[in-house]
Amino acid sequence: MITITNVRQDHGVDWYEKAGPANDNVDYMFILVTFGKCVYWVNDCKIILGKGEALILPGHLPYYGKSIPTLFHTKYVIHCRKTCTDDVLPILNTNKPLSIKLGCYDMLHERVKSVYYQWTERPSYYTLMADCLLTEAMIYINQEWDKGVISSDKERLVEYMKQYIQNHYREKVTKEELGDVIRKTPNYAATLLREVTRQTISEHVHTQRIKTAIYMLTESRLTIREISEYVGYSDVSYFHRIFKRLTGCCPSEFLDERSSII
Image (cartoon, rainbow, N blue to C red; front, side, top):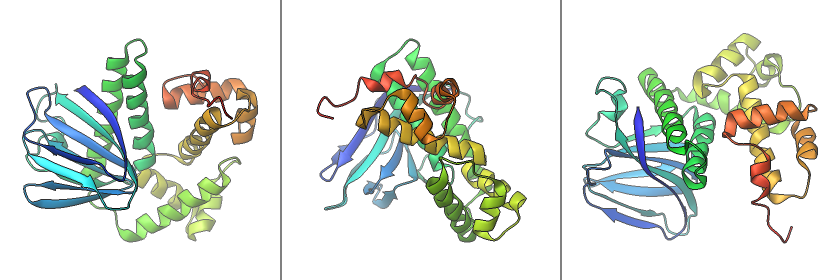
């Protein structure tokens, strides 16, 4: 298990941070970049992180990091302690910074967003929920790490499929369609997407739909039912179940974040 001690979100073009070895409350930092690029220096080693990349930084290492000039970036930073035995997750036992390009980025992004929501909004049992979500994310990262680097050919094919889903998420997306997109068999397309992203076709479609729904809940004046129908759910109760499963909260909780000038 993993215990979180702090969660924050950084963004902008003028971020700078310098730190010595962490105190006893931090065994490591987990950084996930969600937009743009930033750079860290650890033991004179330069690590450039872009969207979809993560850094696991042991707490005993001094470091400094900053934005790349003129380049906007956003990222989540989570400070944690290990409460599991040393042989459970190898990626948490490294003495060196570990930079990972994530094939399962979309799924992990949703998990980390939920961690941030739990930590900042503090609903009932928020610490337990946040710890469980991050532990799950770390397990997926370790599974991906165990498999080694994904080949560039596979990455390219998966990007084609992800782009197709992004353009058609309001419809039913089938493995036959994805097979046509990458000119492979339907079964190969479905297996490859699952292998790289850790999501089935259906799970990836749900993820894209809920991403759009969150944006519309905060940035539009549409009702929950109207948003549900727009993103592809004719049954609003089903929309509520999927939304709660992926975000850990109800759609109505996002309505409070709507701007008064919309």
